[in-house]
Length: 363
Image (cartoon, rainbow, N blue to C red; front, side):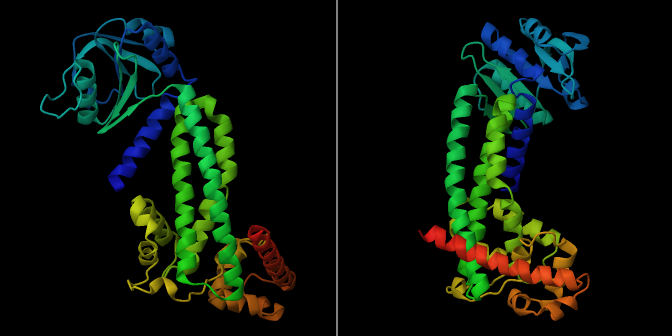
């Protein structure tokens, strides 16, 4: 699963390089319109250079016109690693023929083998089918028409909006249960599950945004607005309920394992419970749990993370924090008389807002 995640990241970075509005993409579009075909390797590392046979070294600036004209020749084109220069043109590339390839055409088979042998990004433009195919390591991706990608991105934004509403309902319910000291492990795992679902849709949209380039700015703004604080809130939930240590490394490890769960595994809430450190039991989701208080305390304005950490360390759980008097809060390091009163007032406002939100969602 980690390897699959790495593949997705590689392709996303490659899509940024080829996004509409970039010099390279303009050149590729010109080649596509002319239906001449091309084989382009990005990178001049030794692994690539040793595969080059023949052609000529030009070391000239990359422009759409230069790329288009050089693609009229049958050989491959080698670009610098920063995509700013065309180094070689009309070259013959000789990758290891024993490397497996699923492609049938000579150009695409060569591109796939070069990518698999070197790990570099290789672009193949089909003269007959008029499509652009990317190869990176063992990954393959076919660039789609911008209008089609934009349509898919807008559909994904609508899906994200729906998932976000469901997450907000689960989060409001969890907040109310925390204030009433009625939280079960099921409620916690449900919120973590919903958060991960939202982030997975957002990651899919991120791929579309990278492919759209300048055309994806509006989609990017919509996504940023929808997922603001979602990731942080999810991390605070994990920090509130994970068994044992809850430092940043532990939280990062848990979120990585969550991301690597398959869709089917994510639907089983006991898998999430196990990631939080709870032992497997048929009724494990029904047990009552108590938060440390991080997530709710972070809702209080102008309360520094260092002070929140001190509060949690001093009181150990949220109910004790909620019941603490101003004088008891004053005993915590970093809290003076004014801040103690602000915390009490902040908790009261959070309670009122949660109760209001729960009432509105029930309607």
